[in-house]
Image (cartoon, rainbow, N blue to C red; front, side):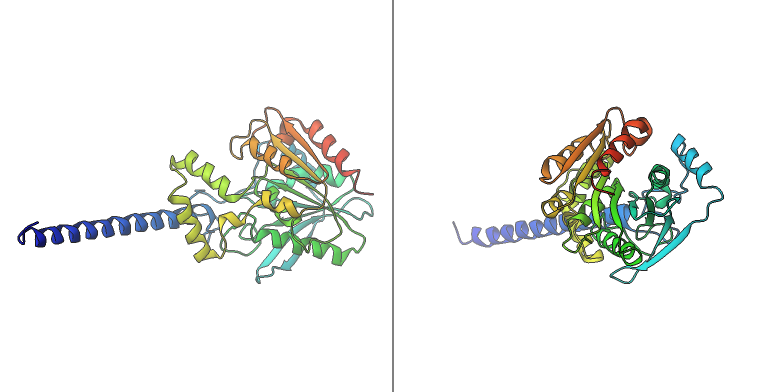
Length: 326
């Protein structure tokens, strides 16, 4: 190499290094921008109660199902109680309480799913109350009448479930509690069941169409909704979420929580569920080593198992619960 070539070579090396730095910075910047958008899109609660940019209108609670019409007729004129508690991080949480017709120490803590509030799970309440269960249906944090600026896909909500179960025990020392959840609520009750301070009064769990983990769920939805790969967008969103909201998607892991569960669990999933895919329900069932049962309702989409075959659904639920409640 001649003396004339050396400066030119050094200059080209600097140009290449500078270009690489610019490209890496642009990649990181675009990834973090996309990650921040995804966090807002999926988790952030707006002032009007809508969720990020996912829903264009506030949730109305209206469902065009026979179960909803049955509930509407059943609840008309009934006097219902409202419960409130404070979460571990200082939020005011609200729940609707549906007492059984007679004296009962059996309770269902019914946890609704993603983007909705307690009204979404209301149609499931009638069969439980008529079977002699008191039902407590909370609005999860950030939904309905409960405070909160974001959803955490079960990460913080699982602690709220523990708080609600503890409140039931404080009011009724003889309580036998069933944790029942749908969709995100199902994943949440599974996570709660794995907590080391789960009240001993919790005797069973019924989960309907829960996901294995928030990370797996978002990976699937990122591809379905946006046609985007997991990397780099989901890791970027996971990082942004940890900075903004104090948790990672990987921490909202229902499948991992099963390793520390010790209560009987009934796993339910629709055979035609393409939102939380059916295989996730099967994975959860296979992963659990405790007392368990699995019901796959053929032809049922997401959260529709009780609508597609209500007789099979509730016959299975109550047959399972009768083993563990008096």
